[in-house]
Length: 494
Ligand SMILES: [Zn+2]
Image (cartoon, rainbow, N blue to C red):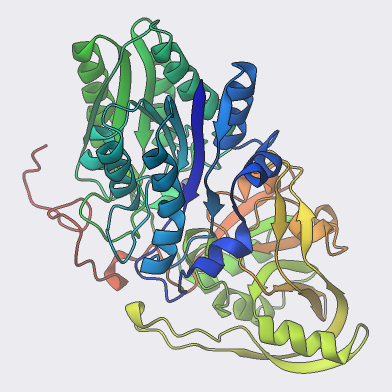
């Protein structure tokens, strides 16, 4: 048996000014051929599970591409071609019995607003009927084109995404069982007009907690897999929003019934998918009154893990203005500031213009750096390995990294985007996060993977940036309408 195993992942924020050329994938990790297996075997990724399953089945692995980039703006035509061409060429050569694909589900490319659906459609055009298993992120915006061009599709049930390898194994087994004639997968999918907000999709909280529990409970008898996707609201494309998909063994009615039950349950909770704003000064003021630590301060509107520039200084400026003591910040993206600190050397006192290098025209915000004076504590290559529950075993490359100490505030400054979901973002640069009173994290929900166990409280801080939860700032042009909560007619019909 020959199995094609590939990964292509990017969560596209249509409002992000950060470009997505091929190099952005190279920076995070883009592998071909035997490199794919050595990079991802044993990792807690869907592709890691696919490799395990294929090796256990004694299958020959064809691995034309495994690439991922941190979320950012629309994927360039060149990058999309470089990602998909090797996969399509491998399919075109023939001799492949099935494919296992590790995708995201919210990729918007210059060429197509449905990056994954277009890839799957092209694969099926070359190899009609090829059995294909697909994993998607919980933030996938599911489309008809994706579902119509694969055999079995599943999504993560956790946010933070700590079950990637589990769903990879689940859907991979369904595919192998289908190849062996043990099951006949049929799928039912659908959506509801809900543009759920990312901050309200954590699976430890309602409403996602109850929805995921219902999906898990449904996975018995003929139901092989059930997924509720929160969707990615910042990918401005027609199908953005909440959806569900169910795989059943040869029982389409059972799949449809389960799908409807899950979607109805989500619709009944639609108000709970809307984030409620709190003025920034009030949030930091509230944090100030909390004893003990570390208190986690989420700079969620500038989360590079959802396409933020990671250089907005609004929340950090307020932390300095209210003089919070004993703070560590992860992380500010500012390669020029890192170079300046590296040139000055460890131990030097520097005055520099930190962050605020990127205009955000989509939300009408100009870049606003902060002039600060501090001591260069450390300069490093920014490489370390995730040891927490998310991306376990994967090497993170933050690029050249420096730590700037301003009074009792330590700021990690990086040259490549990285969302802080693992303690390594601090420990790799000599900061003990457990010993701090406050940790400012440019993250929304993924921080929970590494930091929830050590945090005594969490405060969401409404700063500025292109991962804002303020829908008033976002000008959607491709999204289907009406959709909740952007449009609130008196009588909603599903
Ligand atoms: Zn996600």
